[in-house]
Figure 1 (cartoon, rainbow, N blue to C red):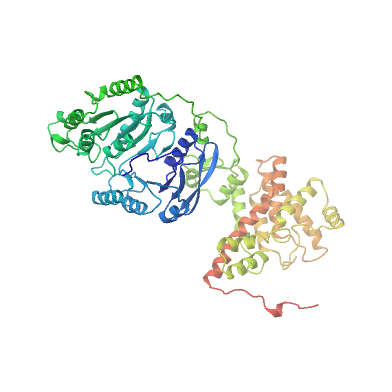
Figure 2: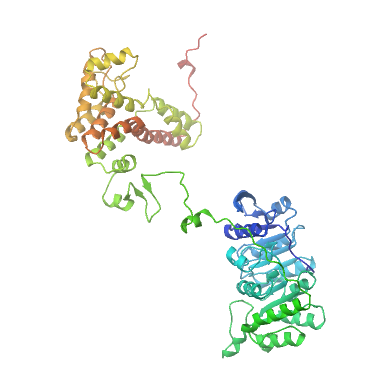
Length: 608
């Protein structure tokens, strides 16, 4: 067991089993104390590596994450404290691994319920190798103004209230972590505060005892008096009784053993800790308090009198000149986390992304304000979802049905078009679904699919300006621009695209107005007089009919319609539809286990 101070302002720890809050509390304490370096050197998270972002004051820092204890110790040879947040099932094994590392000097075990046989092995190994175990079932310990373990002393507000940001003159040791927080507060009220505080843990076999730490405190010059808080059960306090009797402790010790109420119960009582169970008179709180009093410790008559007893002892030492009370200092302000500050209404933080189409913060996602359950209960379809997410409103059923028809008709156009070809080649190269899909989507543009937007844009401009088909087509020709939505590689005037006919039939049957489509048909009549392949294609049909949908529904202003066309909504419809087919081609090639594609030599013209 160590004979002096365990920690200092330069102590660094390795934290086992990542827990964000206790690590951040350690770093906040470091900043509060004015430490130059963070007290957490590295994190050990079995199976994970990389970095974890946390705050050191206002500065965001990256703490290395290691997958093994050995790797962490090798990377951080100056980190000599191991803070173990493993569960009771693995705490013993990981603690033993840490104790066997030459760089580790102190191991704190937070878990409760560690098997007693395992704990005994840890204690034996630690004592034979001059190492310290704090716990199991401990909250840890703290050296005021220097270093703290995990959640010791609670929140920053409590730490400031207990003056733990600077060292005092009192050494404190307790079995209970919860009572430690209460005693830090009590000691701060009636003395200049603690120098070091340790909670040894409430299990039957603690890794280090009350007397171990009292003997350490006795050798630390800055500690002028000690406070001990024991509890009924076990005989740990009697080792302190023997140390007092043998004169090994020459500084005042104020002690109290809690659990005196146990005698009021007719049967044996098990208190909160595994070790807090009296096994006879010697293990009772009364028996221990009497033994400590007879050995020379200052023992009050009750727990209620403990604060006054600590105060009297401290003031006597001040009068004797043995303590010069520590001067108070003002600690720095710990920056508040943004999330908590926003919730408390202390700050107004600007957002970085605006979303007006969906919201997933409530009990269920909403599309344009319509709950997901309502969409399902009403039997709405894909077209309705698109109308909510794209147009931010519920369009009439004939509009959403038209959208669905467009998606179905444009889902695929065989394996030979550029998008499908690219997707097939990529899939046969062994690439994943997303890569194969994207390779096909990247071919969509003015020559493949992307003509829908241009067709709508040009047809709308020509119709709104009152141009005749002749004026429109000849004007485009003078500009050197092909009329978007007109022309097809295969289809002819006497062999029209069935998809176009289906769309036109649906629109004429259901749309209140088809003025833009009829204008496109008039343009087609003129272009067919020039060449038999200059038919209205599916891009032109969709582009003109979407103009009729937007204008005829009465739900969009002229400015909104212009914006929809300009942004590229209609091209988005083709992208969405064709993705279905491209995904299908990817699955098809994977299912058929097709090999890497190589274009045949005979299909290439080799020339100089």
